[in-house]
Image (cartoon, rainbow, N blue to C red; front, side):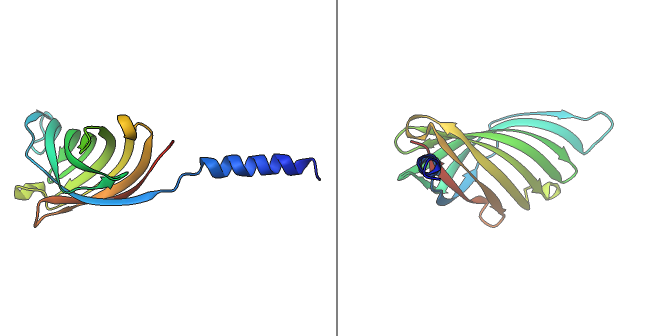
Length: 162
């Protein structure tokens, strides 16, 4: 039994050292109309298309990640529109106050497009790395669309490996 004790201590210390505490974050972003957008309509289907677009988002209530606030973001999206609903995927390049970037992958759904603007929406996102201090960032979260303010209210958690 004494021979197993050093191995058990080593295993516990290794596991404990590899576990990173998750830090909660939240913020609000407003995204402009796409500045680059391409739509391909589905033949013989008036309300069905695929779109790829790019837009700028501004953090009106910045998230603070590792003590640094994010400023703005470029979102590149590809999505399918059927009637009043769109399902899509996006990749975000977020610029933070010190000039570094943070990358996110997102999947989303937006409803109520038949009324001119989105009436509701939900994203789920996951960090995909970054530059500088954010190279080894991990974490995930979600965002909900607020119609009255045309903003996405986001929350999540992150950790940065050493």
